[in-house]
Image (cartoon, rainbow, N blue to C red; front, top):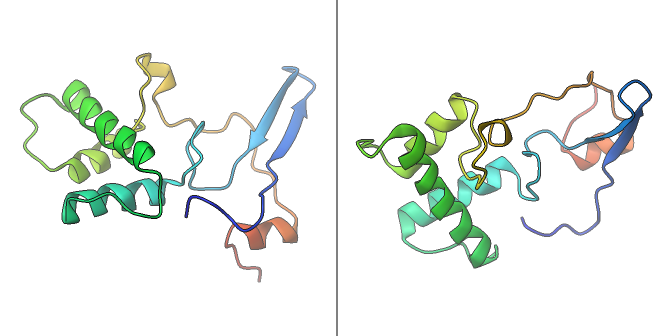
Length: 134
């Protein structure tokens, strides 16, 4: 879902060593994307199967994902790639590439692994992200 009933506060941690602020996003989101990976995959699947855009998401955003995915498939998998866009999506993810990025620099289009250690979230945050306790 593109909009939530309430806002989600992103945790920010200040690192005294590198003097930067690190933002912790919920699991399942790429850096600089407001939609989850599952939501992007669902929109692309809907487009491929039904030949229509999902009505609950902005059409312009879905068109961007569709065009960018096609560009990344041609760029990284080659013009001879015979699979569907969803197969290309999955293959790019397995090679650690964000499939719907517009980045031209290779370092900016890879799926980043957080440079900071995993921090346990308080119970109130866990419920927001669908995690169960116990």
